[in-house]
Length: 84
Image 1 (tube, rainbow, N blue to C red):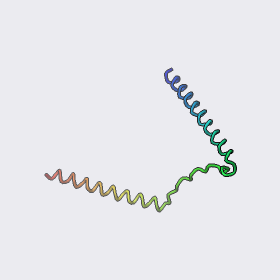
Image 2 (image 1 turned 180 degrees about the horizontal axis):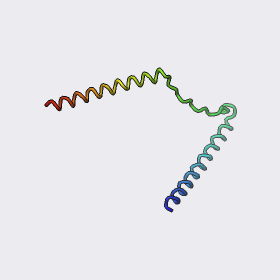
Image 3 (image 1 turned 30 degrees about the vertical axis):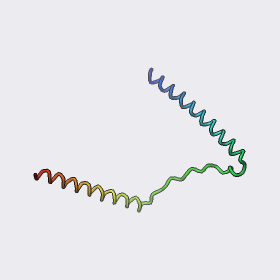
Image 4 (image 1 turned 120 degrees about the vertical axis):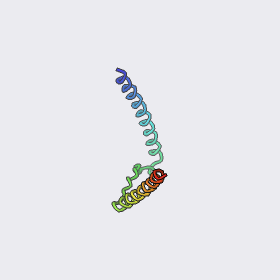
């Protein structure tokens, strides 16, 4: 029953946050309306940046090269410690 109580508390907390956000949104809309035509534009969400296949391939190639270098250095360190 503890889990159910925790879920109910979380639900009340989220509903309270939602109420606050709706109030803030209403305030922002009222301010935009008061400003008139200068605030008529809708808020535009930034588009997700897309990586081309060639760009992705270049990143993969560089990553593999970097890890190969790390492995090579690690192998040298291990070989030296074994020879001593």
